[in-house]
Length: 245
Image 1 (cartoon, helix red, strand yellow):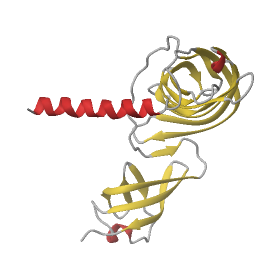
Image 2 (cartoon, rainbow, N blue to C red; image 1 turned 180 degrees about the vertical axis):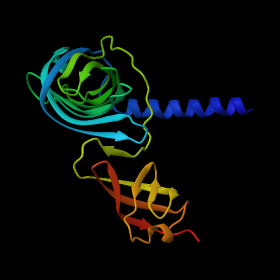
Image 3 (cartoon, rainbow, N blue to C red; image 1 turned 60 degrees about the vertical axis):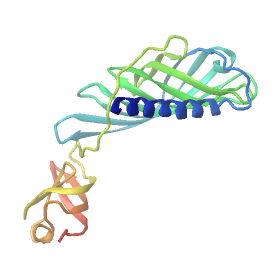
Image 4 (cartoon, rainbow, N blue to C red; image 1 turned 45 degrees about the vertical axis):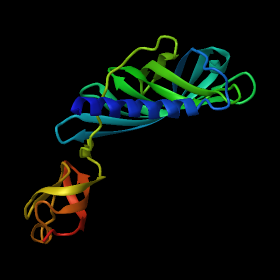
């Protein structure tokens, strides 16, 4: 019975998902296969690095890339991609999300949003949006070579896109890798506290001398902390929460 219940739940999930996709084609006729290729180089980028508590380097990049798309008419023209990438450069994995716009020859542009897994320089994901053709929804597998600093290469929308990996994103405290003043914050249960330090959701901060935080709060209390990072030390600047009695 347990196995049958799980199968039934899975079928319901598939039906709901199928309806959501089909609903995107309302007003159209039959689905049509399309394919395109694209490449785009860096137009502008802004990056920030941080280091996790277990020593991994995370690079977050906001970028705009421009280039050319070719293929079916709705996927041919100048292409612009605006992305936010979060890449663990220590392990070579991450996530890239954003939007793309293809300036087709005439009429409305083809636009889509996408989310893709990054795995050692390669992307694989899904793009959802609207094609140039009136009333046409676009659902396309997307793959490409990707470097946040330089752009997209050998990109594909449909047409034999390459598969990719799967990653999990979990909250983890991250501190700046440089020596300038940076701010960090974390919310959750206090996992460790003393008169000199406090740890919340993996973020450890030094408690300033003379503060009563160590006596006011205890392990297990749910709080939000804010800290300033300077010269290798995170120092607590603010704490909000309630002591669990």
